[in-house]
Amino acid sequence: MMIPVRCFTCGKIIGHAWEEYQRRVAQGEDPAKVMTEMGLKRYCCRQVFLGNVDMLKEISQFRP
Image (cartoon, rainbow, N blue to C red; front, side, top):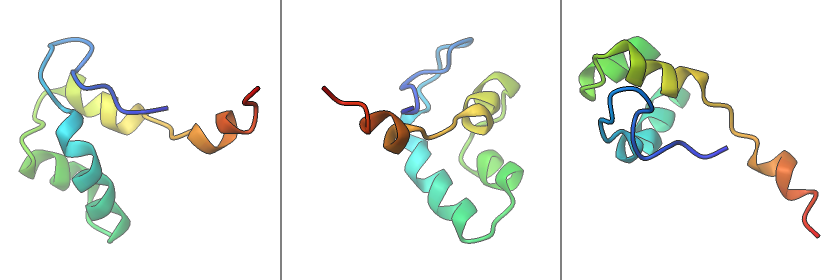
């Protein structure tokens, strides 16, 4: 779905970094390096980024 605004565990604001993360990873950069450079150093914040699956296209097919 959509990336949450805050980390579920620690509450750090992470939603602002999602678009830059996606852009840089799509360009071929290492995801771990990108997250470290953006200030996501806690494993709980990193798991939100790594575990997110964008399913908006699949879900939007079933609108009433």
